[in-house]
Image (tube, one colour):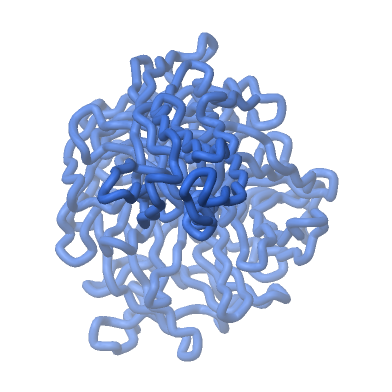
Length: 600
């Protein structure tokens, strides 16, 4: 519902007067000057002040001055309270001129906290301006300007209704609201205070325990860090929240009671190019588009087409959706039901399936070289465990991360282009294997290195990896969990395990792979070891990497996950936050994003 501000709505009325004869008032026809005032008003300018000089009255607007003879003016009445000046001419014609006021007259009617019931740290602002302009909002940080959250909305108009985000929980928040011109130049700033509260039904452990170890805001990539928290487990309602550089929560969605979005999102929410979020539900199997306050925009019923979402869905350049799925009731050549081993492209408009990739046909579903004894019982069904999919626009291929197989590249017709994995157990797929290179560019031929039994000083395979992303140079960055590294069984309480962010340069023509950069192996060792889940992100403005081991890492509060922003050149840590839960499982992914989408 929109709330208007009546005294900010100015009716622009201008009646051109007919010049009286010189015998009546001694004036001449000054239509041109008055037309100039009207033109300035029509351009959306505010009057700043008037002044009389030498028989002329100067009207100073934001971007120009208009001068008319004082003798043609009867009165000028300023009504700054209502953002107008009333000009009355000697012939009794009147012109209401929009004028810079002193207050936006904000009240509780202008703003509603948690407007949908799902976004406790968001609000809806409704306001009208006397002339066209833009709306800017700012919520000041508690501990200095580095965590001020401000945004200039792109809309130009009289009436504005926008969602604002970044309130602090359980306290009074002062929101600064600025009325700007069409170019974003500030005209007037006013403020309103609102109070946030915790929803009555919010579970006590919604947030992990948060502790900041390192924070250098001036060195960090701009934005907030969204945590894709698992909450009570992979099939609990997803718990997304955003942290600022102080580790304070500045946005979250509580979706457990949402009629559609009570979803188990696995790797979490992806921001679409239109600014909304995209995710899937591993319980119902479907895909959803929704905004930052939990309004459902669109639903794709892929379950009705025989597929169930899991782990990840992402937006393609053509707008279609690329999703990791289980094909319902699919059996492999051994007659076993399988899961987590299909990828589909979904037409965004129609919901039809454009392409299906069946990993049973492109890989060897009997290869068990990388599986742990602890997970061997379900291997025949969950033999691949695809956990991420990445589109390659230059060749219309997809890259799929598979916990129990490795990283693969598939063509549109499901042919295996290359296979990044230790060579053990790959007899049926020799043609697609990548050969590692040392730093001098020479092929590594040591059979134990190729098999994964030992590490080369210049190279190691990825083991049970997650979250592959492209770098600007075309290389691939991913989170190497270290799952069964060197084919050793998992020991969550041992001292040898480690995870890392690793950058690979893959040459598909020569079928080689070179390790270019890594972080976590020597720098962090066991204290960043996450045997599952987890993520990496490249941060382009600072050339940093966001390294996110999400489960089982020792930390200041016991155990759980870490958010680590590291300089790629120096490996200096500029931001580190520890997140803890009793069960040590915290998040699938973390990502630095702007609080407001770029298109708003």
